[in-house]
Length: 308
Figure 1: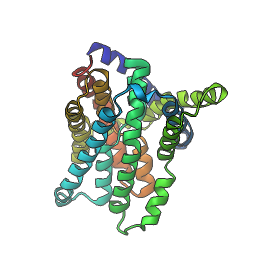
Figure 2: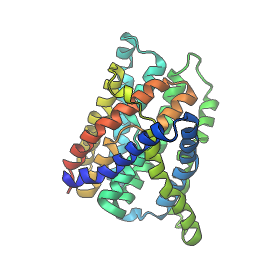
Figure 3: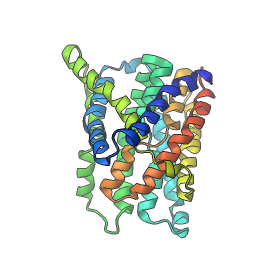
Figure 4: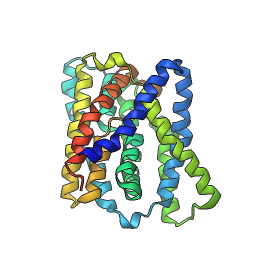
């Protein structure tokens, strides 16, 4: 447990640094929007492509890790949709439901990668790469569909949904990296150095953006929707993933990385998606703030339970 907490310390120090930089040096939201978009459209795709293209997927339990995480996403999505009639009876509108849905299903890849690398080195990164392939396309497809269906009163045309998905940089970067890996295209020399340089910037910048997006007032303001999304993401999702991982025969580092990837708070790009597609963006920011704070406590417990 102490080793897990030690690996989390630098990650959350970067998040706190982002909060302080936002308050003391870069207070204008526009300054952070540029960093956020740079990370989302350039740096993180470079990391995905380079990591997936170079990962030795033959030595990691692809089916177990990928299957457990993908199945947990499907289970959580089904649970949220099954609870939608109950949420509506309490007065929750469509945009607010989409923020709860994103808060319960998405994962912060920046945090998961940083912790997996700190704890397990190269094997941890390779297993996290499997998690990327299993979750990122699936999560983006499901969440874009939910936002298109519930965030606005008018039902969008299916072509518009396809265009939104086709423009998602995380989906196509996963596809490119996986194709390069399967075709054994070498990513070495200057090409690797270039992609690696961009990719290594993505994690610290992404964590700074997480911190910059935190609102201290949100941390002390009670909201039932935020509480539900937080319980689903930080407690129920890891329980789903670990139960499925054990059912698929995982153990050791593989199961620990499943715990890491399922126990992280929701993704900061959920806020971007909420703004772009009509979700409740302020509620999404509130969910992210509370989940990020509480994950300091829940993540070491979830990972520590299965850490070899």
